[in-house]
Amino acid sequence: MSRETLLPLLAAHVMEHGLADASLRPLARAAGTSDRMLIYHFGNKDALMAALLEHLAGMFAAALDSAFPRERSLSRRACAETVYAVSGRPEFAPFFRVWWDIVSGCSNGDRAYIEAAARMMDLLLAWVVDHLPLDDPDPEMGARAVMTVIEGSQMLRAVGREDIGEAGLATLEG
Image (cartoon, rainbow, N blue to C red; front, side):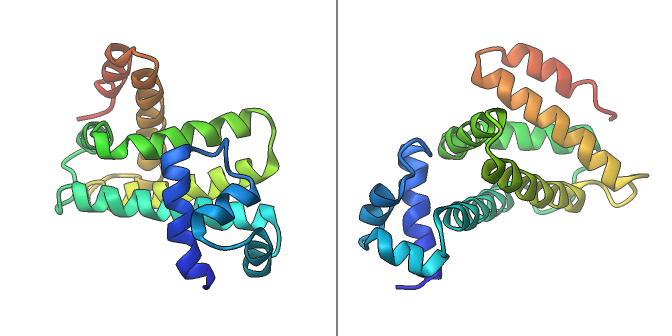
């Protein structure tokens, strides 16, 4: 086995069970290997988690790409509304269960989660930039605004207040 063959197996386990059970032994069992082999391939648990979370972020971006319309959005608001609608589909629920685990780890000050979340956000910001209108006056700032509204709206949906999140989406230009 290699890192490249282990990561999808580890990701499948985390997508099903969340990060609460993401210690070495359960992860190794899920991948059909030993915890020593995981350390061999990744160096330590922090490096394993960083690689796993980066892999999950790539999976999320790929899932968005496959579900998102091929053409660029007509506005920041249209981009945010489409991402919000697409990410509310049942197939995205496992991603959000893991994301809220990551957010919880960040709120507890866990450096590994904070660093992984920052890399994930950078990847998703770049994804949003690529889906904003070509004539957006400031795609970098636009992506930040869109991500802020999307993240807030998704959190509000998770706690049963999608009415507030949807009102926030409506505040974006266009």
